[in-house]
Image (cartoon, rainbow, N blue to C red):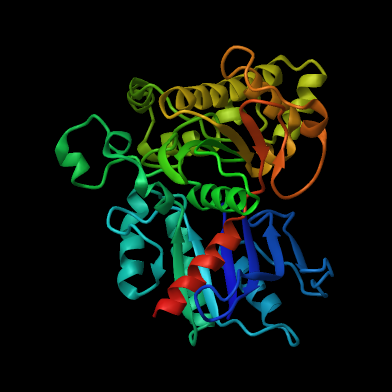
Length: 394
């Protein structure tokens, strides 16, 4: 089976194809190609499209991506060119399933209605995702489409980790901690096991534009920093992480404030950007090295926030291994060092050369004692695996 995976974000759409056997256990999905339409909605839209061997497949296709729908149209044109394998199933990363969907599943009109209803939980993510899914279902009407949710991995959390201390009436409406980056965390567990590294208790730090920290025991999520929405938890690129609820009330009481204006600020103008005006860690570190005090504070605030979350989970769930993943987690050695060094006491002892080294796959970057690893996020592969499993069971 040839599975097209669509992983859409706020300003980009990643796409990839995997080929796998039709039977369960017939082999892991194998990459055929991958690509990304970046800068969606900006004047700097660009496309990357390569096969498994690294050959450029872009051709001379004009890059038009003023809107997500225009971007997905570009993706369709790219993947349906002559000579490329025919799409036989499509899998999507969907951030929030809402209150009623708790597993990866084939997309039906009923599922789409639930996702439409879920916009009250994720107004910045789900509406665009549904538009893209509907567009793709129209373009590929003859194949099955599947939704894979970032929250499913966290369904194993105990009730004490899921439940907010609020009135039962709100819990009955689906207000609870869902957790996100689940496909990334699941891919870390899978890769660690495949590499022969099977720590009983892991803390996974997914650090990128969005960030979360998750406690995993025997491969199952037991706690995580993100909650009802992807806005809470640790400091992120443009999101603040956890805040005093009273601050929300204060902001809403200000003259001219609306729920929409506060939401815009929290999702696009807070976090690292709110602290120093920048939200890319590489640019922030460059500014800090030039003596920008706000940038220095932003780096320290970010690392402190992640360090506190890691230390908290290490204390409450235990930690045999600390795993870094995501764009910052995989590529920023200084952030890894700052987080690990302050978890408790002197912290896990990193091997400086291993921490600075480049490479793919599962990499151990610590010496004796608690293991510290760098593992690439492989969300698309997890989606392909789930699609293959669901398809074979139908």
